[in-house]
Image (cartoon, rainbow, N blue to C red; front, side, top):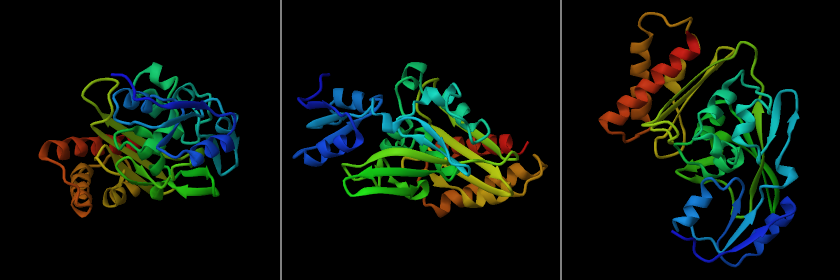
Length: 278
């Protein structure tokens, strides 16, 4: 397939990029890594009138250590997390997750800001950043604002971003030395998006369990997190308790999964939970 006719602009600053999109009379999109938007345009699933390239903007790169958290530029590549170019405040979780995103060629181009803005429920970063209680720093025509990840994604491929807003940074809390995590991704083959995805983060007797690849926004499994919060190792009976709590969470969320998907997501919960507490 070939893309529909469009205008391509390469911005020299965040402000210029925002101005170009704000002034566009039609449908405009920002392009960072282009690993999702590019194929969508070629397949005509997206037909923007204007594409603004923001991949080279220095404002979207770099890392700032702010003590309680690190601020990572929205243009940071997946490969930068994988290669530990970016400090990992989550005790190795970010490196682990990044290494399993698609293929190395995609990780060399794809960005964390682009992944969060696209908000595909089968992608890794939305669920991981929600589990870590990260915040998204957004800049647009009306100024800057900071949004909790739990409020940022509103539904499948739907966020609070206005058309002219850009994710300029992601603020990731610094975990304690005692923080443990678990991550399980189920795919039909290597390199595919997740069919089931679960992230568990336990720190100072607090626990967060987030399930992705549900077709909607990442889902907080609060009853499941309650079982894991005080767990002292992988004790006898905990798997049965986790399965029961998981079923309660799924029913409470009115998540419509068929029997197979319900089972596969349940396995991901068990695997991620075991990694976090064993």
